[in-house]
Length: 255
Image 1: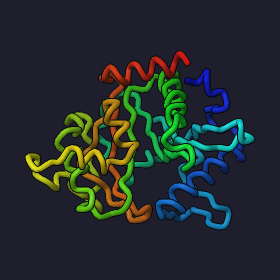
Image 2: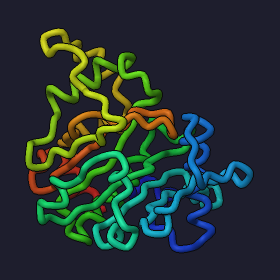
Image 3: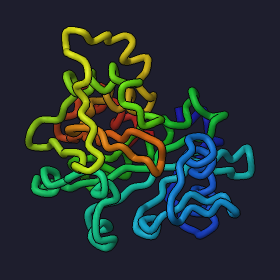
């Protein structure tokens, strides 16, 4: 696919200008679109930023047909980077003790977004190809990160939350738990009353994609009032990938 779409270019941001372009796209998506905010968000410059940005690697996707416009973003944080930052970003929302005690190499994913006019196409696939190469290069064992439902009303998304609990809960040895202060239980509907079709219809596309690739979720959702979201923690054990994910990674590495 990358051979037939040479106008897409995925790479790690290397300059201040590239980082600002990534933060600008994040502003468009997380602030303007989804109504998020934060202490360091710069509304005048239209930059969604936080104190963790200097420690993350920023995977960016550009469209070379549009003068290199940044149209996709991923933040990547390895354990050594998290140590310099003082913590993983998602430790403010989840107790990551099971992952940190696993003795395996961790990679935190975050701030994944694609410009509105590129959704539904292949932009995210190209980001995943680049992510696959990064994972292989750094010999990552477990990937994790928060993904969101828009809004903070759990009852409105009771079907997909309950489906995640009953069908996609992480095994005990990897099961992180949402912090007590903003903990939202997932099993809001009895398992025998689940409507899987409706649950998947309401599932955000990014979460749905990770589930199809073999992902698990932690215990509970975190109510994030700052970003106006319900966050779940997605976990992917790269030693137990399903066949589809292995195939995806092989395509990504060879592309």
